Image (cartoon, rainbow over all chains, first blue to last red; front, top):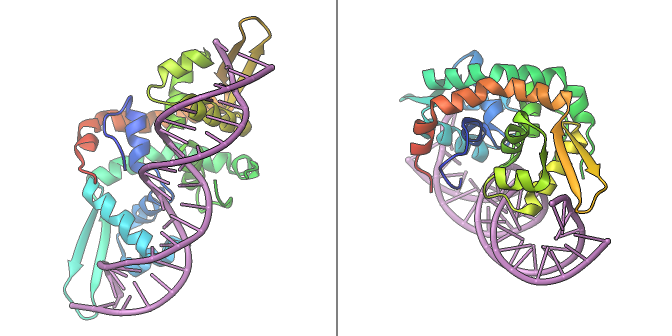
Length: 111
Length: 111
DNA sequence: CGGTATCCACAAAGATACTG
DNA sequence: CAGTATCTTTGTGGATACCG
């Protein structure tokens, strides 16, 4: 990531939720706390590296909580914090917009 | 941009509004139609290249309308389409979220 | 199971110079 | 004024192999 100092709140928010995976992970955690492997299956196409990387980033933002259970086999559970829930709530209208115009968006030609 | 086919509407929406500049440009156009140079001054830090690139992309999405006035000196005015307005509306809660937590977000340490 | 560590490809963004 | 062209830098994400 780059500079701090935003011109408007939207700028800041897009910086937080931007990138290829964060919105998807947020969405996957929205329903219920999930284990690492569970998330990996749920967020289709993501590599373990990217998953852990994004999770750590979101954890440092305070959006996600990481709970380690010292067991054999190991178990780590990820869940949204209150802050994460608030972000998810703010994202609902955007998600609905995307859902409503999905066909249009998918039809856009790109290189 | 990469693949089409999204897992959820949020995914699609973030793909559309993602990147460093689109949200800012959308915001700048939200208030009123603007000319190229006007936008360039309003969206601080953007290069002419990035501005035109993002505008063209958003135009191809159908979010932005480009009106050329054949004059000397040249005048081109950009405005939001209905589609663009609908996106902007969906972004309002996110913008408010970002505004509310701006201090928190800016305080996050990054490499 | 839940990660780390490297290396690498490609796309996004920046700098600079020039044009109808 | 409103772009275009080209080059360079940076960042993001993917592949693969290995560890507690």
